[in-house]
Length: 296
Length: 260
Image (tube, rainbow over the protein chains, first blue to last red):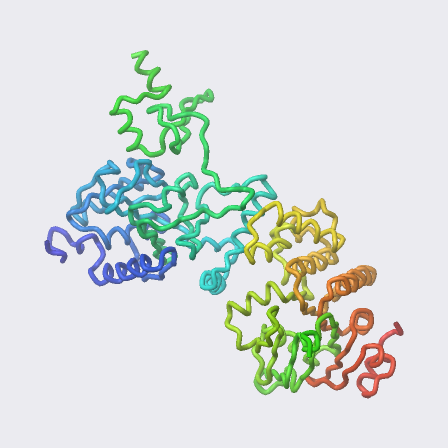
């Protein structure tokens, strides 16, 4: 397949030119070689604003090929604006097959969630990252945070967790919860809910993180330790929900609150739409969907 | 020769030039464990430059500083790699700044400020960190109910006491102090000095304290070094130097303050 621009497709395959992709791939390889280390790269302008996933899109564009199947999720959902437009972008520029099914995808680009369906070897999960530096809001100087990473001086992160417990009685951080990768580098898992942190630990899939505005790429290779920071007497805990999904009845999944009317009606449903749809197709019914069907 | 006969810190021929301008020049001394050394002199005499060099915050133009590590070996502090140096600075050393804002994290609670060094050296038990922090707040006479308040809500004297607690929590053997009582009113100064004197004696700390206030030197230090234009012009036991100064400049300095 030709990768050069033609009259019908004015852009190179997957939008970025080959030299740029080469540069990004080199950054990715280095990131994989040093798990959790933030590799600087020459982030390009993308046809979308910063904060919409320019980093993730560049990573995906550099690793995607015509035989891949792409899934894009935003807040766990396949059908929000961001997910739809990034999916369309790659359909147009990379002529790639797309899917909403987690198990059918070879590359999954995500803004927040890690799919509920366990990932398998050979799959690549690409995270869109706004703030790659976990120490940024504790130490504003980049020179200093780099030194802290170099010397593995991460006491300051625990000071932040200490402050949480002192103020709130528990570690109040619920997303972008700091992790140690392979026992060496402190890593921000992007705005992923801490519910998904355990899924990163020793995942058989390759996890790549791209931050476009901050110009950093980092990675968690398959089967790598990803440990959430905590205190001995305040261990790490994931978010808990007191009810199952209202549509598919799934338990132990991450739920979104949906407002139903202006009289306080609400339901909690799977944030992972593919997981919810799959379960409903298998015949699982949650409280609200069950009522609807009985009424109909 | 037993280990205590060896100096804790040894400076030889320290000089620091800022281009053509002399910061300090040819300063040599030995500091022994548990000893308090005051460095006095007027503004611009090079005493703060000397303190920065000794505490490795500045690279000297010439000379050497060696320190007896906890394992008993004397090491050239400028030959330590950065990881060793930073570990030394947050475990075995302390630094009390004149302006508490430089030494504290102003947005983080008092407990977090005291606990930071503990967490930096690997403490991972919230309950223990907190009880140690409370213990230290008590020792520096800060009301325990303020443990979760940020130092930006503290008075100047409280900030300074918090800074001291934050430095002493890892039980350092050597503390550098740069005008610790500067900017505090007289009664607060007196209380802080009293506290410092008690802590230094209880913990057997070695201290190098830079001050222009001879009363502070008199109250805290065993030995004194008088600096002028970057040079040490007189050195000796504090009482001896202050009661019977030999150098004309020291005589001037002593006579220019109210009798203490």
